[in-house]
Length: 270
Image 1 (cartoon, rainbow, N blue to C red):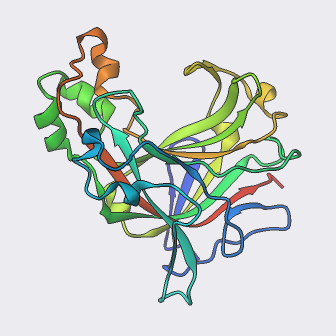
Image 2 (image 1 turned 120 degrees about the vertical axis):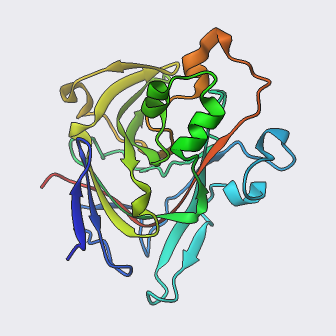
C-alpha cells in the first residue's frame, strides 16, 4: 500500500512508497530498467578540465550517463538501482541540458497507443542535489528578471522533464512530455510516478521548434525511447528571457538533481 497518493499536474500522479517497495510489472509491460533488465543510457557534455563546469559539486566522471551507474541496496536485499546527477544550466541555452538519461526501447512493434503509460520507481537524493532557493534565484538573477518572471521560471523545486518520444529518419521527432514540478519535501523518499502520455503536451519537433499535435497523429508512431531531462520549472534559461541582451561572459550557475531509479516500465492501457 502507498504511504501517500498525490495527483500532480495533468497526466502525472505520484505515490510515496516504502523504501523497499517493488514496482509490479505485467505480462504486457516493457521493461527499460528493473532487477533483470538494464537499457539505461544517455549523454553528458561534462568532460574533465572544462572551465564551464568547474563550479559543479563533483568531478566530471560523476556526471557521466552510462549503463554502469548501478548501485545495490544492503537494506533491501541487494536490490539494484540506477543512480545519476542531472545538470541544467540556469543562464545559457547552449547545451542547457548538460546531461540526461535516454533509455531506448529497441522494439519495432511498440507504439504510443500500445504503451501510453510510463511507470517509474524513483528517489530524488538531497545530498547529490544543488537547487538554487527562491531567495538565491532573486539574488543572482534579480538584476535582469522581475520577481514574477523568476517565480514562473524556477521556484527551487525538483524539476525533470519526462518524455516518451519517436525519432524519425529525417530528424523529426514526435513526443509526449511534461516537466515534473515537485516540492523538495519529497527528497529522499521512494516515489512511484505514473505518467499517462495521452494527457501530456503532445508535439512534433524539428530544429528545436515544437508544433502542437493531437493524439490521433501520435498514437501510431513507433516509440524510440524515454528521455529524462534536468529542467527549470518552465524549461527556460535566463537567455530565453534576455535574447539579444544576454551577456555570455557572466558566470554560469547550475541546477543539479540527484536521482536513483529502481524500476522503469512502459505499460499498456489495458
